[in-house]
Image 1 (cartoon, rainbow over the protein chains, first blue to last red):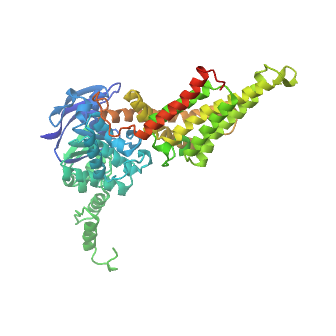
Image 2: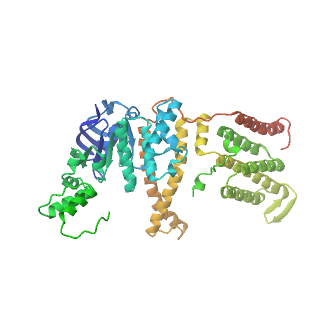
Image 3: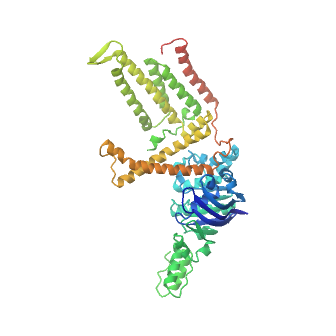
Length: 290
Length: 262
């Protein structure tokens, strides 16, 4: 079964002129890690909010086409009903954490579903352990670091025991190390817990390592859907969506276009070193400096 | 900065461990006691008792000072101003044109100042020893609707956040050359518009995400919501509750039933 299936979806926000989404068709398998790349205004947030029914239930507009999560039509189920299928994490960590302690934050969702108390404790411990915030139960969310806040927002979504996690630019305010930690956490959710992850992002740097599938979006339309290795074969697509491609691919592409007789295909720093050194044999070596 | 927003000081005292409902009731009863007492000596005793409790909260000196500074100023102000407006009674101690200072007015001023002191200080005992979270939990447990409790908790939670936001907006505007401490009062208030507008926009955006986030986590899905943490009345809490009730009931009965002058 598909975790998410959108067919012919268009959406216009109430009072807005243009389409936020224009004839989108995309599907995500269970346990799949999908990254949606696009610049501001590409329609990423709209796509995210459709996946748990916030559109059309909380945000009004004209919706065409069908959106199904695990077979359930989002327009026929409430956001609360869908919340046990789809966990949502927003961009701003500050405004989605509203409780006075970490523990309450995680328990909030399941409490609303009237989960019994002993099960609440289990879920909170489980979710905090998963995101690496174990032992911070009593801390105030406001005192956590940026990365910890985003992890807490993820734990709060996980405590609902969803089968898919949707994140709208969660790494936006994080430093590079924090980003990689976050992506690694999401990757482990797909691998160890079979969850589907739909990640909205405008940072392409780590897609090869973490994503199963990449969706390139621009102005409410989908440009390409493919595995990252395929997407990265031709980085011109990245220019079209106004998102910089991973730098290592940009260098390879630049060298290939400037030099004749080479076809660099490195994808990591190590590969780049090996390929480049083999191509410049005439210069003396300093020995291993790395 | 934080101390201004949250008066709670983490300590392990009897008052900290007390059921927040008992504390709320105690504060209410002590306030009522301040209202029904009209004589200086009983009120002064009450004030001493409240200050003793405040001492027992083991709060930091800076917080206690911050809290009491305001109360003390208020008390001094009342003591000084009272005789100027209340000119009844004799003997007259001093007279200057239409203004005369009478001895009973001075006593009445002092009494009122102490009463205000009691009423204002007693709440700090609650604030120093109870986390905002427990306060809200207690209110919900005492019958406040959960949505109101949540709204209150969220407001308390976001006060510091907005405080910091306003500070950073002010810094940003200062960096652009806006001076908040110069010029006439009108000029200065106008300058604050440059802080107010971004702050309101920020607040609205936060509120929107907040509402989406609440909905995404099944807020309001069922009437019979469960709670992970519940406050429970222990036997020591019950004993304290009885003491609090007696502390209020004995003077009240003495005054209203037996006509004691307190």
